[in-house]
Image (cartoon, rainbow, N blue to C red; front, side, top):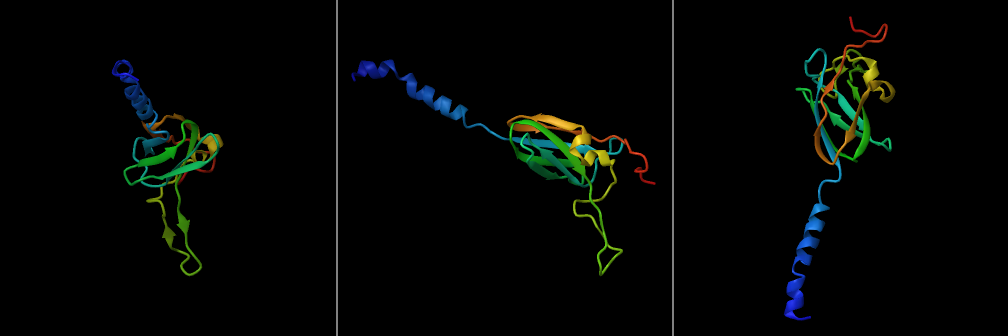
Length: 145
């Protein structure tokens, strides 16, 4: 190959490098958000779990200010649930209360089930926000006193 032939195709290595770099972007999604309940207050504890199209769970703990971050979700449709947890007692200490995911606040049961939560999104590669506003939609006999 002569110098003239090399000079004619100088752009090929540059184009191949650009294509390789373009394919190296994030292939999974990270969901950031804040859970609000009740009436615009941050939910101070619990878990948000996203279920991707294959049904695989991706959990995130809710922080004291209501924020959460779920990482490594595959792009595509996802559904979410929110759960708050409070355990009571043990055999040795039946009056003890454990709150493994932060302060317990009772939320409507519908948000803890995929079929009824109504929480869904389309996950995109990279970062995206998904704020969650839970409504006080209590089933009969479920509302706290």
